[in-house]
Image 1 (cartoon, chains in turn purple, cyan):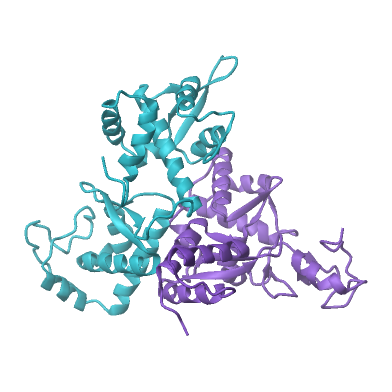
Image 2 (cartoon, rainbow over the protein chains, first blue to last red; image 1 turned 30 degrees about the horizontal axis):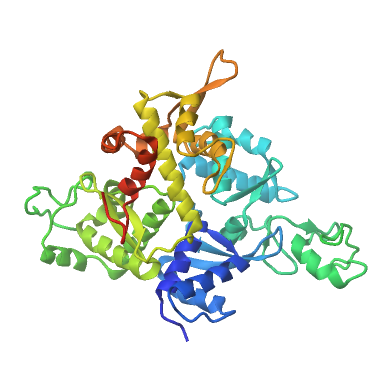
Length: 237
Length: 255
């Protein structure tokens, strides 16, 4: 059943690699485009099979095209990730040691936070306590901008959270490294960085998952402990 | 472990792990013997590491030096260097449709290029990266020609002649002013410092630390010298640059 690797697959991979991550609709458009260019039959709605063929080749290289959901809009995204066991391997060849250390500290702050965001102030305060090589605040600001550009972090109103691409790539690493703190969404069972949590039992749910789950309920209740869900349901304004 | 062997021609001994600037020349039978002393798994692992290393560097448009390949990836497997590189090359071609191209034969510096036929308007992000790099090199050349430092008014006047206006939204670059004054500065290609006691404020443009590392002034000078033959018009400057640095690839010829 596994198809042969063709120029259509290679072209898709080159483009996806240059973006790092792509939204589902964009990826399907790219799939059609690549097949057209290489004059290969494009099986509609068979993007996942197409991706499997590529993944077979990527597997010995510890790389993979992985699907994941954006915590912001709930849409499916495709990301090219590094699956090597050592942490942050792909990042490691891109950044200096103190930059990586700043990223790890930022990740700590984000995961330990209530809402999945770390303030720029808190992150910059870490900058001159770095063990590897201290960083001035101005330099740290630049490094943060680079992390945003490279899609490891997302920025909103001066606060930082993990980019969808980062979550897709580092999900296993995060669940392993922060075993008691990192939350899994009660509905879709994937890592949840931003979430709403039940006040009674602490169960967390992704915002888009809440929207989907509570759509049919008139009185929203926690799926875990059945207590009244106190927050505004996203998407029902 | 491996015996000390004298390789032909280069006079280097293979036991010398500190010297990463030279790869020992070897006969095919020597390579074969070296291969046999390593397990298939070890070689596979090194090939994978090299492929990942090359991809990461190339995504950032950082040319890859052989010295770095040897020091950071190959290390003690120097004796089977050619085998690892060949296999990495085959993997790059088979899986990604990419190949290693040597852009500097003296210092052995490589980039990855696509072996797939180029298509207009696709790979949008890559094309934008290339165009940005082009613009950057033109600005660096201008600064260099001005004696390593140029006033912002001079730089913008120069760019205006290339139809790049700071106030307008450019088809490829978008907000040119933001690109030059924020992105290039953030990436440490340019250093822009305010000139004190100027009103309205004026700025000084210089090469940033990354520019100095990734390009040599000698490279820029040789580029500028070639353009000089065309009368130094900035339009030709820009146009010529693309052929000089990025070639035509395929149908278009090289200068």
